[in-house]
Image 1 (cartoon, rainbow over the protein chains, first blue to last red):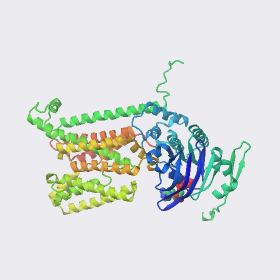
Image 2 (cartoon, helix red, strand yellow; image 1 turned 180 degrees about the horizontal axis):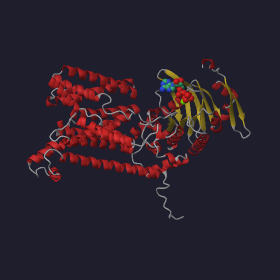
Image 3 (tube, rainbow over the protein chains, first blue to last red; image 1 turned 180 degrees about the vertical axis):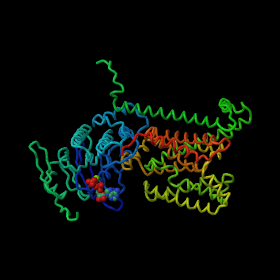
Image 4 (cartoon, each protein chain N blue to C red; image 1 turned 60 degrees about the vertical axis):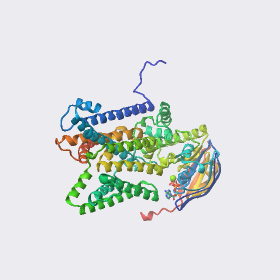
Length: 264
Length: 356
Ligand SMILES: Nc1ncnc2c1ncn2[C@@H]1O[C@H](COP(=O)(O)OP(=O)(O)OP(=O)(O)O)[C@@H](O)[C@H]1O
Ligand SMILES: [Mg+2]
């Protein structure tokens, strides 16, 4: 269980998040974090995982006050996947994922470590990529490898920043299915920042809306995916429909912001 | 089900393939170690006099087995030089590997951040003005001065990067500023120096293994003995550092501390090597490159391989420097570049083509 009380975060003097409080995010539930560009979703994740110096407030994960933990203990409890990772390292996809498993332990790679990596590759169906250098993979393939690295250990909390942004439709569904099952099975707190509202609506148990560094709404998916909330948050006009099957669909109609096409 | 059909090699899983690659890499590292050992032995056996290899090995085993003169040649001249090539090459290889790692840039080398310029200025100051940073240096004046200024430069680097936050840009910018400053000061010293002094400065900077003594060898061995285990101990963190700062930090690595720690060790390695043998470029850049091409960047293989590649380049250069013209030993720094470049180019050309 994650509880956040009065979380504020800043880069130097530039204040980004103000007074975010969340009573309880339950383990086993998938929480989607949504909001416009530049409103602080990534900052929110960084603050929780202890990567920001200018963080105020209290965060408690399963009874541990996160701000009192050392960085290596934090890294064992929380697995944070940044929005974009760029590397030119001469490391294969397999080595990258192995690193996610072994980074705080001894330097002997046992057979069972390698087996565990192989399992994750099989789960994500990227076995054929394992021998290639990470930099030689396509954008989406790289993203799958980073996801593999993020989920290989069993942390108490997973924070994934737009993990599906480069993936095709099939892979988006596969990854979200996997995250959903993983969250339940391991009973962990999972938060996923998403821009694809249909994906969020389809998979999230709870939704957290951040706008201009403030918490705008937090609740079960059906309560958040309302026309007025989405319109207000993004400055758009959408139609939110609930299918007979219960699936929520967000149909974009138009942007409310006047496009300055005259400047073209 | 019976295991009649042997599928090995056809449908091996990712883990098998990885473990096989890892084993292959360990073998490459060991083979390289053997080649280095062979090269050092060759270095000892070759030189004016054309003594047979068997005699040389006898003398290495038992100092007095073939008379005093051969004993002096082997133990006082050839062996120290050969070992110095081995140790300095290893130091520069390791320093280069970790400099490239902490600067996240395969084009960096141990002298990227101005350490060699500072050392050269220190040496020239000793040669021209007799000035010494460390009092009572005596005959070691040039060496201690070069070392002192190399450390001074690194100290300025730590202090400023600490002040401004330890990131790559600050480190590189301050390093480049230091390099230009010390180069300018060096030029100033050369401008004011007499002809013989100028010659001395130029020769010093070209690098030479002939300045070796057994105590210098011992110092090099001790410093390697301190640095390499620390690099090895930090191997996962160093490998993770190449995934970028944010990823490394999310793995619980204190990136700033790791950088400073590594920078101190790299500075120590490069300062000592410059002070003892002058500026020998190229090895710290190319040794790690060769290692990367052969075993990738998992530090468990990358670091030892860089050490051996560095050692091999300098050892071979030492052999060649006395083989070109009998009786004349060419400056080692020159030779490393001359033999290293073609070899390196062939490696680059042999590397799998990138289509972009
Ligand atoms: N390193 C930084 N230094 C200073 N300001 C930053 C830094 N990183 C982000 N910001 C600012 O913080 C604000 C929030 O950024 P953040 O990355 O959290 O947005 P986001 O909600 O994740 O946006 P996106 O959907 O585009 O990923 C932005 O205004 C951005 O300019
Ligand atoms: Mg973001």
